[in-house]
Each structure stands twice: as C-alpha cells, then as structure tokens.
Image (tube, rainbow, N blue to C red; front, side, top):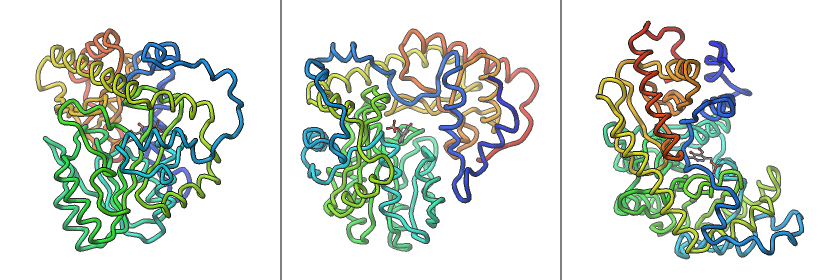
Length: 401
Ligand SMILES: Cc1ncc(COP(=O)(O)O)c(C=O)c1O
C-alpha cells in the first residue's frame, strides 16, 4: 500500500478534540502487515506456543479450561507470579492484570490525572502517555533527554518537583526509543524526593529484563512510599505480544482499586486463556530463560549491525543498552517521517520515524528479529538509504518534531 502525503499529514492531526493521532501505532497498523521486512518493532520476535514448550511450558491442563470471564483483575496465581518478578516488593492485592501495557497505561492516566494537573513527562518517548495526558487536559512539562547518552534528566526532575509540585512523573524506563535506563542510585534519589513532595512516580517498565549491562531495578523495588506505579507486560522481553497480557502494580491499594474500577469500563477482565498461559510463563526458570533468549537475539543482531555499518555519514546508531531496538541519528536530513515513507515505498522495509517519538532527525530500527532476517533487512536498509541520500533531496511537509 502506498502512503499518500495526506496520510503523512494525518499522523499529526487529532482523532477527537484534544486526542492526537498515535503516530507510531498508526504508522505500524497501516504498514506492518504489508511490509516486506519489518524493522519497526521494538520487542524480541514472537514465540509460537510450540516453541514455548521448549522453554518448559506445559499446556496439559488447558483443554479443560472453561472460557469464562475469569478473574477480572487477574487470577490470584498470576498476581502472585507477577509480584515475584518484583521480588515481593508489590503486594499481589495491588496488582491489576490488563490487556498489554497499553491498557495499563490508559488506566494509570485515568486513575491518577485530572484536567489541570501538572505532570512531568519523559521525552523522547512512546507517545501513548503524552497523548492521553493531553486528552485529559493535564498541564504537561517535558523532561527532555539529550544525546549522546540520552539519560533521564533526574536532577532536573528533582528541581521541577520542588518548583512545580507535580501530581505525577511519567518515565519510560528503559526508555523507548533510546534504550537508556536509570541506575539504582538515581532511581532511589528520585523516589525519595517524590516521597517528600507527594508526587506519584509512574514507570512504564515494559522493556525491563532486556538490559545488556547492569540489571535494572524496578521503581517498585526502591520506592519507600506507596506513591509508585509500575506498568509492564509479556510483549517485549518475553516475545509474547499476542497474549495481550500486561499489568499495573502500585504501592497504593487505593490506586490499584481505582485502576480496577476503571477497568470495568474498558475491558472488564484479562483474557482467561492468556491469564493461564502467563502463570506458566512467569515461573522463575522460564522467566530466566526467556530473558536470556531476548539478550542473545539482540546482542547477535547488534554485532551484525556494527559489522555492516559503512560510515557515520549515512546513519549514526547510539549504543543500545536495553530494548530490542537501536536509536539512530540520520545526519543528512531532518525529515525522517518523509524518509521512512520513501524507504518503505522503495523497498518494503519499515522503520519507525523519529517524529513518532517527538524527535525528528532520527529513526528507530528494530533488532529483535531473527538474525538471518535482520542481516538481510539491515543490509538492504543501508542500500536504500544510500540511494535516497544520493538522489533528489527530501522535500514536502515537515511534520511534527
Ligand atoms: C513503552 C511502551 N509501553 C507500552 C507499549 C504497549 O505494549 P503492549 O501493550 O504490547 O504491552 C509499548 C509498545 O511498543 C511501548 O513501547
């Protein structure tokens, strides 16, 4: 399918008053099924039910499962298994199972933020939370990460907490699209300041477990107060987005209960089949093996990318510390939405344009693919980028930056 200029422009429009089009998800929804090689994904390539069997998952009892609504906030076994991921720092009673972390993020915003609330938000970012915050009428202030390390500006956040007394701070840690994540020390400092100010820390930790260096700790493990929310899912690190199984956990029973009550309006209950499968996946041995798988696939692909890279003029990837993606500067054009469109049109290769993360001049390239596909896809991407760079200049509308 060819993408028209109107469609490019529509990526920066509104769906209904106040709610921006979710650029990245629209971009992917429209092209991922027709892309020849999809380098726009951020997770590790999905596993089949059969492959999961090789990781020790046994489905013996599932045929007898009654397909009822199940437990509306997730089964007690599943909430206990999730609590163990946080090494017990979250009470299973404070966990609500959701349809992916996408539903968890929606519920977090609805449960915590009202029109006029001041909030601080990580940027660049997966733009779901910023879009939702705009919709509910929050006063949003962005905490901008800077190259080359793209670290979360924790000291600035601490300063602004004192000055603005925000209701909440929303951080994606590890960050999408940059892969940077906070150290235990920084996180502790932020958490203790948030406790003093009564600010809620809302962390989207969907890439937790993909770190290739020092392991990340969750906000739940360092928070000294009830004022935290951690969102995650089985989609990225565990390679199981099709289960649509995520969760939200909080130190506060009252936040968790509000989330549960809002869920009554949204999806009622998580899919009971996914709930059962998730209990089997979240056993410590399976978790450990799936995390190793994620790191192995990504490390192998990163090596391939480094070997294939011709020079710094075409594309400049930053070191990728977590997530199954690489964030790269395109030094010769700012119009990376238009560039990504041209790449897709010319080659059927889909990358994620920086504009969809509120950062033009960059692209995010997925490195969670099967290594043999990544090798071919990345080599072709370099070729098509070089052809575009050496042909006519990129022109046309310059969407959102
Ligand atoms: C930071 C972040 N949060 C949430 C999601 C939604 O993922 P899911 O609903 O599959 O867990 C994504 C997907 O790309 C993401 O990158």
